[in-house]
Length: 97
Image (tube, rainbow, N blue to C red):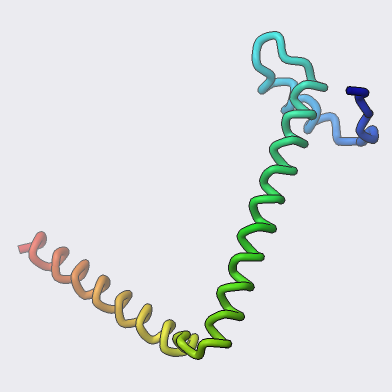
């Protein structure tokens, strides 16, 4: 397999120094950059797949009419948050007795 080069990227000296400071033993800056690019590509692909599944789920929910309106979800989350705050406040008041 032939290799290709990535474009040269200009960075501030502080960023280059920071990158060099975290290199593993025997690792070159080129190795580090290539690994970061591979990890970044994998992450972007994961994000894209997640967003595609989310869009499909929204479309399916709208098509089937079995979704929960966002206002209802927010109301339920607020209720749970209020209950948690009340439990926390009750625990603090008992601890102070």
